[in-house]
Figure 1 (tube, rainbow, N blue to C red):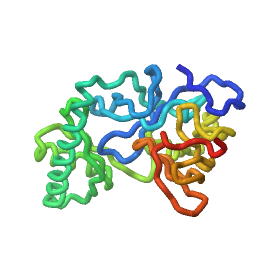
Figure 2: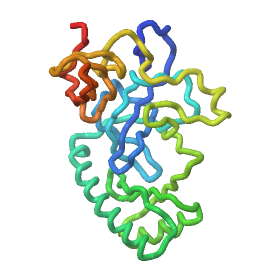
Figure 3: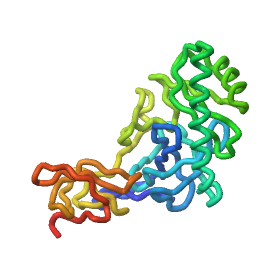
Figure 4: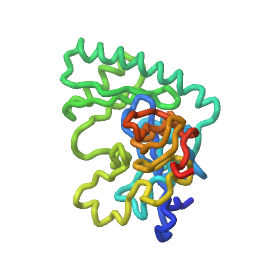
Length: 252
């Protein structure tokens, strides 16, 4: 499925569908090639990971990012989670939080020179993925120490300022983080190309556009796709958070 550009004035191009998803226990949005039909905001999907499948929720749809060529391969999403798997996500999240608390105590007691930044579980709950800041040489010791304390296999992911993982090529607002040798491979990468419409085709208000709210007209400052809300600065100068369903074009 090819993602269509959101700006109707943009000439059509062959594009690669890319979605952004948020994994419980991982702060960054992860970008993947979308190989499933019509992914929508809020869909629960399976992301292939280094230790197995991981649950994630779509927060950026292919309609919001257009790529004519990938700077490097991205993980491919091929399926949505089943209803049973979605119900399991809440339990996995709670288990991961408890495991992280235990892991922090273990690292402190062992005096390991690392800083844990997160812990999450694979979809089957069989493996813990632990992200940390510290030297690469600490990965083996950290893995063995935590595996014994948690009672399950551990996969350590080092976080560093250089060489981000492929799915983290994009920053929080969707701009590509690239190296010099990536530039000749990137033909186009953009989020929501500007157009005259107040709302994007899937219903999200565009940042910087004037809208009508129950409290009066104003300008959209930010949009939360997770909560389906927008922050609007009213003409009076007051900032309000409004459900997107309550917004309309200012001219109406």
